[in-house]
Structures are given as C-alpha cells and as structure tokens.
Length: 171
Image (cartoon, one colour):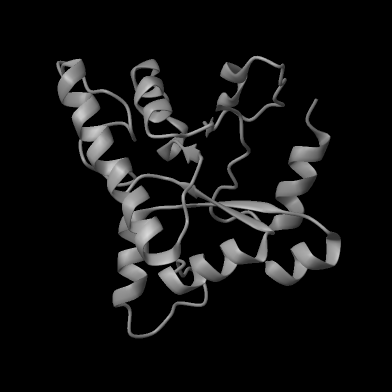
C-alpha cells in the first residue's frame, strides 16, 4: 500500500495486534494472501510519515470469552482496568521497544466499545479511538468526540472496488 499512499499523497492508519506481530515474527514463510506486519516493517512504515501505527490490543482480538476489549458481566472495575492496562500497555511497551512507535490511536477489536475503557485509554495516552459503526464522523472542538470514532470495516471476501463503491454511495 505504501506506493499507493505516495502516488496519491495520502496517509493511513494501521492498527496492529500484538499476538499477530509475534505470530508473523515466528513464521518461516510469509502468506502473500494474509500476512501480518513484523517489528521491522512497523518501524519502517512509521518512519515514512505516511502511516500512523495504532494499537489494536495485544491479545483481545481473539476468542477469549470477552467481547473484544469490553468489560465482562460480573467483572469488577478494578479487575477490568488491570486487565486492560496489562494488555494494551504491554503492546505499547513492545511497540516502543521494538519499533520506536508510541501509538496515540486505539482501535477496538471488532468495534466493541464500552464506556469503562475510556478512562484507561486516556490514562495510557490515547488521543482517539475507533469503533466499527459504519457512518460518518462529526468532529467538534470537544476532544471527547475523538473517542469512539466510526470506521468502515472491510469484511473478508469483498474486493476493494466493491467496498469503496459501497462506502461512497452510502448516505
């Protein structure tokens, strides 16, 4: 995608999942159909100035009994905050150590959002978050409008042209 960003003078956000980075680091052969970024690539992309790296959790983008990064029924606030700080903060540390990246954007796994996460994310230094509601964003001067930004999530099996047609024709 980097040549396209350069060609069209655009930028992008890549939100990375820590477990997927580790998986890619351990792969002997890359899958050209679905590979993940490794630490070296994250560092390179970050240095181009065309790609901003976001945090997409270390291990909450998997089937772990919870809905993404949301609080679970019966989980108290202290337990939830400790879990979230450990997971997201752990990826923040790894990104800094391995690639010199300090994300200020957080992307909720599967777009599942809960209000209990916002104070933790602010404490960890995030300035904006993304959910998966597919609609336009309306930004004001209130910084809180940057928490829970909508995004279009391209599902598996739809090509880019069809996806962009869908997004651009929605009202």
